[in-house]
Amino acid sequence: MIDSSLQSASLLAALMFLPLVKKRVYELFLSTHIACSVTIVYAIWQHTRHGSGRLWAFPIAFIAVFALSAIARLLRIIFRNIVIGKDAVRLTLSPQKGNVACLTLRLPRPWVVRAGERVSIGVPHVGIFYILQSHPFMITWWESDTRGRATSISILCRPRSGFTRRLVERVEPNRECGAWVDGPFGPSSIDLASSNAVIDFGHVLMVSTGIGIAAQIPYIKEILDGHHQGRVRTRKISLVWQVDQAGDWESARNWLQALVEQDNGYMLSVTVFDQLHSASEDRRIGRNGKIHIHSGVVDWEERLDAEIADRIGMLLVTGDHSRIILHELSS
Image (cartoon, rainbow, N blue to C red; front, side, top):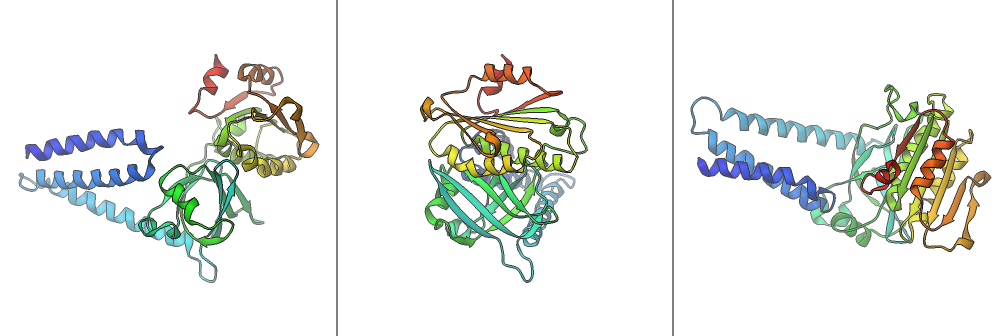
């Protein structure tokens, strides 16, 4: 009994540290998490089955809840991926420069996408051990039908290891293959019913570096959509993007140009700093030159001072929290 208690305590401690490796090695995190959970349930069963009372009912209840949640997830996946008379989910991988990939999924059952939503994607073609395994991704872009429901979603990622690396290596570029999707998961940080929502700020400054632009694009798209429908208070969006690696600009260029084309209210300005190019290449592109490309590195304090001087209403700053940008802006 002591061994079981010690084993359970050790595994509970291990579960607390697992999130530290989740972002780096997702597959290892998932496998270890499941193994620890199963072992804990077994240890609790061993600890309670010979005791007095009905303590053994607790692990039984846990197993029942787990089984019901697994069935619910399976039904959700079937609902999202299978529609009678339509093809299943199809995935197209488009390689970009700088080891960046764009994943586009054609959806048989559309839904209204909200900024900040993510989905889990499984691609059987990746390998036999990945047939039932999925990987979470944030939705970067979507194309909608006349009812505002997404008929396809796009995801921007930089393959590192595990699932994403195998995906790029084994899926033939620019050709459709079978996939399955689970989700969407959220909720969005933009809540039309919340008084503290992003859309309640008159001026939104978005700062991003590298592939982190993928997290900002859906919010710009949703604010512009809301502006056309008269649902937002935002009157100015300023995006400042520091390009880190080769291929960053190319990966998001078409989406940024689509956003400035969508901006009929002239509320969006995009400033890109590309340290990979010389000063002689500073230029303006897009509709009415709304995308201004500079060389060099961003002076974040200078940019914040400029935005404060020209702000419209309350100013909200959003950015990549994994770096020290916001710390520099507030110092």
